[in-house]
Length: 245
Ligand code: ADP
Image (cartoon, rainbow, N blue to C red; front, side):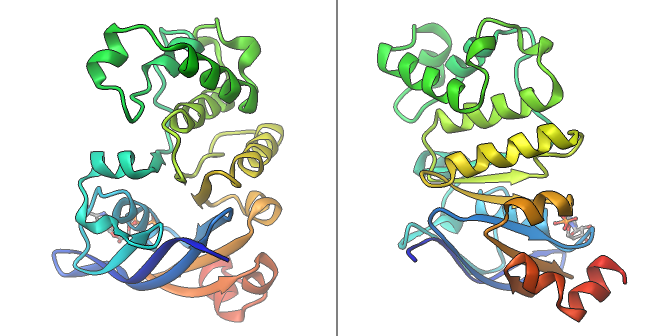
């Protein structure tokens, strides 16, 4: 399977403390890869390194075979096709769903044109497709404030999709959701992962079990185990440090 992301010997230090310690992993195109591990394991810092928010002390992150993302600034990484979503949805609640989609700064539009110029027909059609995919087409004229917590999360995923990423990084996307919204989120990730590989940091083990193609367990900044949900769940070391049994 062709790799979309290759992480080699990645180390991120804060004042000498290695929050991410010599991590190696390869993420294949089309995966829904979950990173799990106890609090402080380095999961968020790893995502931060992939999207350029923190610079590593050592190692490299190769995107699409030859782009070393550690050499790019955060805003450039969006342009090369990596989208990042944080835990709290950051949609504009006083705007409609459609308007939120239109505000997305797509690759060939400046912030100025996003704010002050009308959206092209092609972009409108693309946004309509995305709204169908995320299940919000019927609500496109509703204010984002009226959306449920889950719907706001899906809208933000839609706004990321409008930038046509090839890799999407999601930090606890189902936190605060009930079971039904959680399942719908997983189904959404399954729909998009063929075009846009998905990397998820997650605590909700039911969600991980239901939707992971592969799981990486981090502990104290390092990879403790990697494999299928079944394999990592049955690894005694994982049970000891993570599941506490
Ligand atoms: P996780 O997401 O797995 O809970 P984090 O990546 O947030 O873990 O944090 C890993 C470790 O790095 C923790 O011990 C945390 O306190 C530390 N850390 C994270 N960010 C910083 C920072 N900006 N400065 C100093 N230490 C940090």
